[in-house]
Length: 426
Ligand code: SPQ
Image (tube, rainbow, N blue to C red; front, side):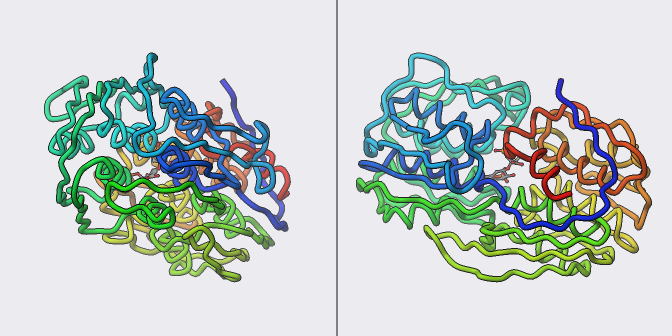
């Protein structure tokens, strides 16, 4: 099992880029597959999760060509999808395996619900524990037949999806979830009439933006496009926090996605006193991107709750690391969703940062962290969760002594090249 051994860092002075956005990369493959003709995706994220999406669409009959299997950064990662139109997918004889990717199973289920064939879709142990009723319920009400492992009010993968003629729905999301919203909207492409999703609190809107960018209109065929994927702000977040808390640090991160439905972390860190500047903002392929300038800062505690939570949901583990270095109390609430991600992130990050000496209390729906604390090196574990693994790695950079993070192969699901980039900035 891979592990990372981290020693304290003296300073960070670098200009970097992070790999392409995971959410946008998944969507480019799926929507490009449903378009007619070629879609070229530049800066596609070559991570295990996104490659699982590529493999599934390949099994469904779509030819997807990778320019370079080894690429991780802007220039090389050009992926070409030969889309076959809205009715172009064909039945896969084998089970579709999404690996660790919640985005793949939930979004693809929406597409499979509209097909005239039956599919079975599953993933690794973690995926088989993640709740699927949230997509199954609306997709069933659109007319799809979906079976799975049912326990109490929940349903789990493997899912057997018998698609067919779907009816449009108007659906109010009971939880803020971009994956549920996207599954319904993608199923809606195969329904006659208008499908509408109502959100009480807005979750990331990459699907809506990409459908608009491709010029998709209800039920009508559309053409392939060139999609330029910005760097992933969720990946940049680890380096942003590293530069805020490591001594004498200055970091420039170029070409990072700054979609407002994702920038909760920037707002919260600025509220905590972080010196963060966003410059050179521009919109490419329907998505904003910018350069982020980070300078080491003294941080103060804050409250994080309510409408901002979906806009920083994946960054809460790394925000917890920042909070250990902030003066005063940071309270995070309304984040119960973290219990059903790749791991129970509230339990995982509280337990492991606790081992490093953080004053951290796990709440039912969040955490209370009191800082600043001098962290100490420890032996910690990732629970097979990439965001927990990378957050603990960043904590290790400022801890006294050596930190060993066990089970770090999971980092490949979202951030290939993480370790190399970490060595590069030192
Ligand atoms: O794909 P997966 O495994 O669900 O990935 C995670 C992550 O941390 O990378 C969540 F564990 O991100 C989700 C995110 O939490 C990606 C996503 C999307 O691309 O639509 C939306 C969010 O999930 P949700 O459940 O709130 O819709």
